[in-house]
Length: 227
Image (cartoon, rainbow, N blue to C red; front, side):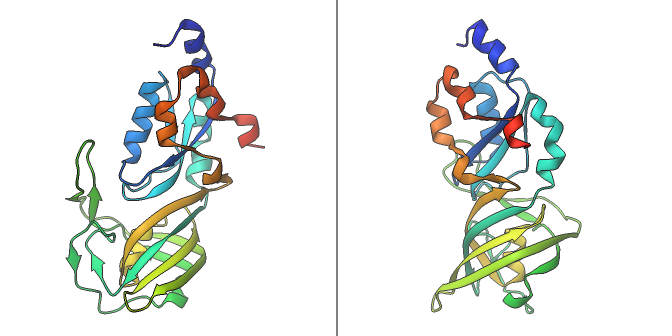
């Protein structure tokens, strides 16, 4: 239970909390857990992250929410693994197998503008559930994203496994890219959001163990974040 001094401190705490989300936890669970555990009033986020993905989440505390558009609009960097020659309805390893598209995008055409459509199906994992559940999210509109950098290195040609790094604009969907490439997204980690880097993030498990008095030490002040 927080005392009055701690509650006042949290009320006046404005900044960015960088969290390293593990695979298998919904981004909304991270936001709700941090807000509840530390008795925070206003907690926003700078972009969602698939349940199957790990890596950087940017949480905005109090007045930092004024800068949500700046964070939402920032470029994103990812690393991950594709398995070529297999596709699923979600684009990732937790989906149901579907036929590989008859026409797939060559790897040398990934860089540049990409018209994408979010997969109709998404693999989610509800709190406390052991397995992923594939849900129908309906039809989505096409949108334009941009890939600035894409490097893909075959790890095992016989199995079709390849590691990749990707730098793209806001909204770029690695799951949709996997489908376009005739592949399945086997692993995904978000490394950067704009100037924020996952190396500066606190692991979610460490936040769960932290005490109220230590929380302010995890928060990046506005003056530093916006410098």
